[in-house]
Image 1: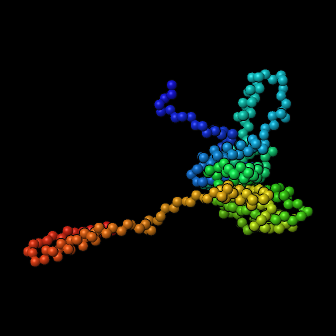
Image 2 (image 1 turned 90 degrees about the vertical axis):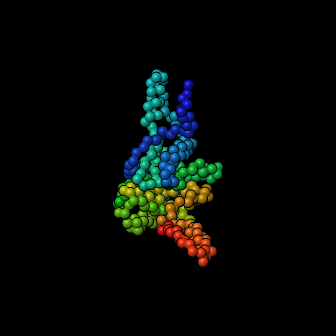
Image 3 (image 1 turned 60 degrees about the vertical axis):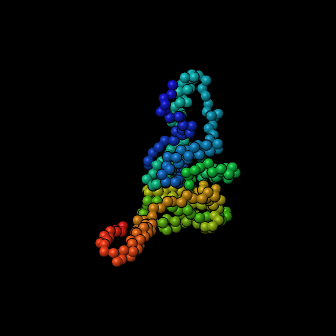
Length: 296
């Protein structure tokens, strides 16, 4: 029998396909996700559901490629499957000190974050269903490095050249965002990244670029990626892409700007009392005037 105070089981899918860590480090690829503040838990569950769904859809497990040994017993086969479930976790959820940010890394070599995020937005557009409530933006990151100029340029040289052939010029731009980092010189870094691209004589176009280089600085780590036609997907802002209005931030009114409601009760009392004094003229009576205090 169920106890009276027993809570009903949640119907929400329990996503334990990723592990948690608090360290964003070099050598990762994945997705940098921004979300509504104070909604971190719901965003992580929502992002895990979204990424797991599309990874299974576009990158199914190739079980047929694994040869099975007929001599293995059923018990050993079950133990191996359970061990694979425990050890193979495609996602790693990395929490950060920056509020409103979380990073999902993926170690599957078949998955290109830029390619996957474009497929997700294409499917969202075709179905006209955002499938998210708390996620604001999903930025693909193809490589992470230390947030110093030398390491960033080293990482940039590994991912930028394949996207910019020598045969014909390509329109491009850089999307740069820095959080909790004051050591980098933005203009110097962007100029040197531009030199890597302009070695092939390409053209900067801020309004309608064919290629967009994302450079995301989070504390002492930099994330880089090169994406085609990112403007078509509103730079991967789901709310803007779907035309959903942003939620206004409630700001508290400063104390010195708060106006107290006007209360005329004191003035009315004084007016009525003065009329009573006029009616008592000529009478030999001592009238006691009460003291009225106004609120400061």
